[in-house]
Image 1 (cartoon, rainbow, N blue to C red):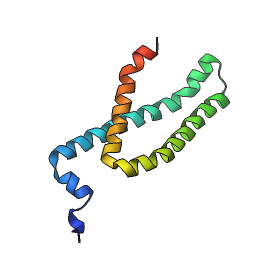
Image 2: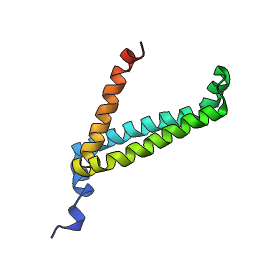
Image 3: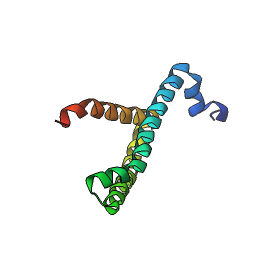
Length: 107
């Protein structure tokens, strides 16, 4: 029987390298979520300057939240299969690659 004091997250955090990687990943997630949270209060100002209704802005925010919910539910089996650390690492890699490719898409 495994020792409950030395299992799961405690084993991972005991290794300093893995702890630093986890902190870096968590900071990246925090920054990404802060960016989204900072945009939402400013959207009504943009809506007024572009002549977009508040209802359209509400629909935009709602569609983002619904898409996030659907994606979270769809990715749950992937997290179970790959494990949490690999899944978060994969997510950060996807966001990094898409951020690097963004300038070419915006042309």
